[in-house]
Structure formats: structure tokens, C-alpha cells
Amino acid sequence: MSFTFHIACSLRKMFPPVYIDGPSPCRFLDTTVSPLLRSTVPVDFDAAKELFQRAMESDYSSSKPKAAAGCLLLQILHEEEGNSNAALLPVLEETLVFMKEAEKEDQELEVHTVRMKRGGGVLVGDRVDANYSLEGSYYAAVVTGVDGESITVQYDDDDSSETHNAENVRPLIPQTATRDCGGPLSDAEALGGENDDEKCILEDYSVKAELAELLAKMGEVKEAAALFEEAADDAMNAGKMKSASEWSSKASELAA
Image (cartoon, rainbow, N blue to C red; front, side, top):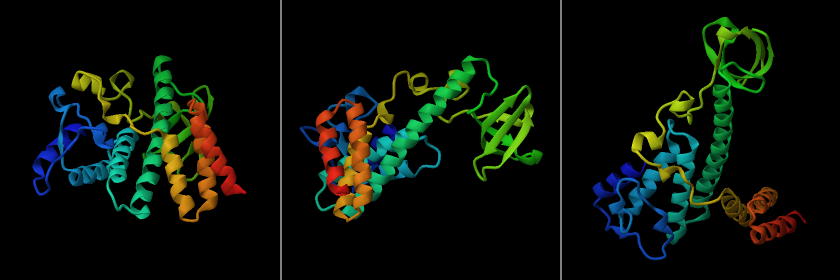
């Protein structure tokens, strides 16, 4: 995403370039293209916003880069003047969804890695594709029982269950899996170094708290209180006691 970002910014000439330096929140916009671009980078922020939105709407990417794009888009919107709640609300909601999905993808990858280390096979709780009604169409399911060569699965679509032999059940390879786990090259292998483009510059609890503030202003008191409570719990687990106390108090006030 970083390479495309800088190419897009270079091609767009209709707006004067803005330079990233000083204490601006946009200092977080960085590049893995070249260390020569890390000090002062000309950026067309209108083009950047469009690109980050496109990244969030991609059908092919995993959730981590989408969450990272959402965080960067939020930083730009925060710095701009005149953005309404209507402009911030969908970005906050989508970014939070991607953060949760990214956490789920990490958990699925961990399960898959354990399966690879044990030499394959499936266990109860594993995510699989199964041959629905032996018709040749495979659908996502979860393993609910294993008895020798018989594997019972529950399908995601309709919660129905079937029992198959092993040849009709295929373990899912998470899209975040790298080559050592049956997937493509990792960023480190492909680029010769770590790719920072998937790192979020915001914590999920801060996004939850901001969304809660916005919902409270819009009169969505119940939803705001629940989000403030979630943000407080997450902040406490992260050792951010001051923020946790503040958000917990707001949750209590709204719930009263």
C-alpha cells in the first residue's frame, strides 16, 4: 500500500502538496519504499484519503492493512477543519470492525500454525471447508466432532451439521498464512524486511472511546455507555489506568 500511496500522490497535481514535518499528527504517514522518503514527503491529502478509503473497501486484503488505513484516514480527518460527525462516524465504525477482524484472523492463524506443527489432521474447533451433501461444493464450517476417520462439521451458512470422511473435509488456510504455514511469501520474505504498513497507529480502545463520544453526542446513550465500558476494560488490560478510569466514569454516567 505504501508504494501505491506515494505513486498516487506524485501523480495528483491538482492540489498543492502538503509536507509532513513538525508536530502534525500526519507525521505518522510513513513509507517502506525508500529510507530517503522518511524525512519530508510531499503528500496530496485528498488523494491520500481516497486511497485509504479504497484500501478499506478492498475485497482481497486481510483486515490488518484495512485497519491501518482506517487509522491513517482518521488522523487526516482529525486534522482537517469542518468534518462533521457524519463524516467521522462510518470511518470509526469500519476501522473498529477491521481491528476486531484482524484479531480474529490472528487467532485463526495461530490455530492453523498449531495444526501444521502437529502434522495436519483436524481437531474439534478447527475451521474447514466441507463438501456439502457430497455435491462437490465446499462451504465454510467448524469441526464439532472427530471419531476416527469420521468428521462432523457445522456449516456457517445455516448451522446444519454433517458427518464426512477426511477426504471431504479440507482445513482452511487463513489468508494471513505465510509460506511456512502453507500460504504465500511473507512481507519480510518478499520485501527483504518488515513491512510496517499493517501496523495501526491507534489502539482499539482509543477508537472505541472516540466512537462512544460521538454516539453520546448523537443521543445513542445505551450504545455509547457499552462502548465506553469496553474501552475502559481494554485500556485497563493495556495498563492505561487513567484512561480506563475516565471512560468507566463516563459509562456509569450514561447508564445512570
